[in-house]
Image (cartoon, rainbow, N blue to C red; front, side):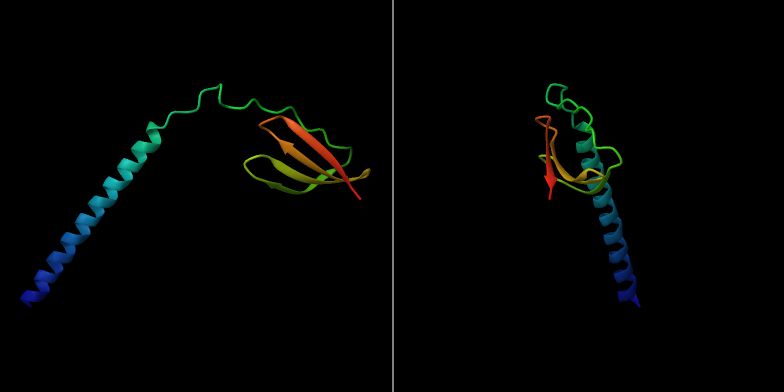
Length: 97
């Protein structure tokens, strides 16, 4: 019975220590997130002008990455693929056969 009391005491102590370590880890991680400074306005790219789509069109699929996006557009005039790169404000439209 004495061994059971020691075991419960040791495990309780371990639980308290682990909760303390978890609280410390969360507090230091949150402090790093709060301390991050936002980018200056000079480094943030200017927003692009709007992308004008053909009449009665819809975006069927869209895929993107860090450099830009590709949009598959279906319209009455035909199917198009738009490649948009916000960093350079470039847009390319390709008619799909």
